[in-house]
Amino acid sequence: MKTKLYIFLFFLNIFSISIFAQEQKMTAAEIASFKDDVNIVSKKIKTLSTDFIQYKHLDFLSKDIETSGKMIFKEPYLLQWQYKKPYNYSIVFKNGKILINDEGKKSAVDIGNSKIFGRINKLIVGSVSGNMFDDKEFTISYFKVKGQNLAKFIPKDATLKKYIKQIELTFDKEEATVVQVKLLESSDDYTRIVLKNKVINAKIDDSVFSN
Amino acid sequence: MQKSTIQYLVINSLLAVVLFSCGSVTKNYTPKKLDKTSYEVPYFSDSKTDYVYKTNITVYGNELSGIFIAKKINDTTHRIVFTTDFGNKLFDFEISETTFKINSIVSELDRKILINTLEEDFRLLLKNKYLIQEQFENDFFNIYKSADKNRDNYLFLTKKDQKLEKVIHSSQTKEKFTVLFSSENNIFAEKIQIIHQNIKLEITLNYLKSEI
Image (cartoon, rainbow over all chains, first blue to last red; front, side, top):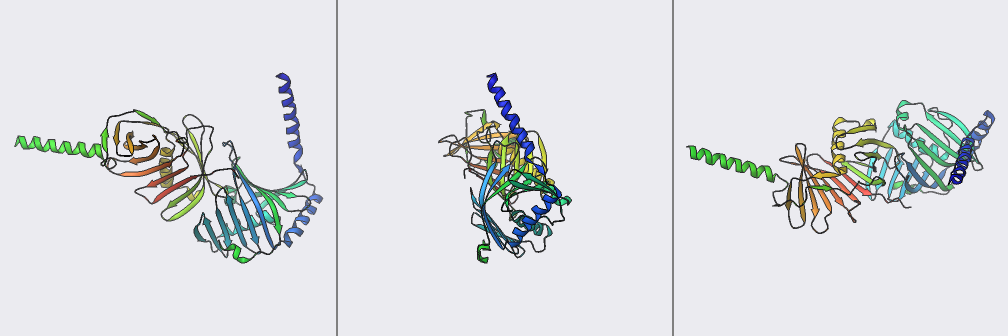
């Protein structure tokens, strides 16, 4: 029994060491080269579609809440975020409007020049394409993680800060594209979105964004 | 003169008794001898279960969609969180029969009248134990009356399988709001509706099955 406990503690130790070893600050040169890589890739993006799995983590729950679906983006500002499981819910950003289709129940919100929604749109597109480094609204720090790069964005604006404490984008090192978006709220709760099956620059018709 | 006064008093007090005991909720139901003095609600009672629901709130024609989460965190208290579909928290409360704590709420929803309404709704939704003072029946339900401060709750249990399908929260004269439960196994409610009679507010909860 005691041996088992020691073995357990031993592994726990290794595990926690590896956690601490995971994140390594990038040097200035590494930051510059990483930003270049991402900018080159994201500038080429005319359309992007990707499957996603969203994990909502709340500290008091025993299990993360999982939802999943598909995201489609087309330059410059067409965006569809579609949940397929366990329910159908789709939201389209198009020409200053938000179109919602909630299990067949449709509604539209005119956001016109609403600054906050313009920002959200920019934020979602930026998060998925990775092109957020020029954003003056965040304090950004850069890390290396095994086989991946990690950028942490802390909002400067007080209003945005109320909703999002920090955004973490994880990039595949080779492809320089985003593989995970993590949105941390003011408390220790977060939303983690894993992007999979990404397709860049396939032909996407505008009619996709009709909802 | 005296006789007519007494008659008047008798009629008046009879009328009062009739009005008082029948109220608006039970006027179509038959009084019955109590078969229990308390009732424990199975829904939301398990501290190991994450109660997660896809939720639609309709308030004066406006729609708000999101995810409602409730968890029993100790013997008396539930933590309740409402997030958008994207996962942003809109509010985060801790609620018991006697206490109410706001952990967080977005400024757009931070209105006293709305918070008070939600507090009242969720307290009834999560209420675990009712003490019963009166009982009624109709063809399908046993109806139990339970005092709630200066108001009353009426619990509708099916005669067939003793499932709680409806709770009406009512003043002496008027129904305030109703909670409807649909449950297959009488342990977990798959669908819940909270419907207000005096304001245009309806909350619909559908169990979010998490397997993907």
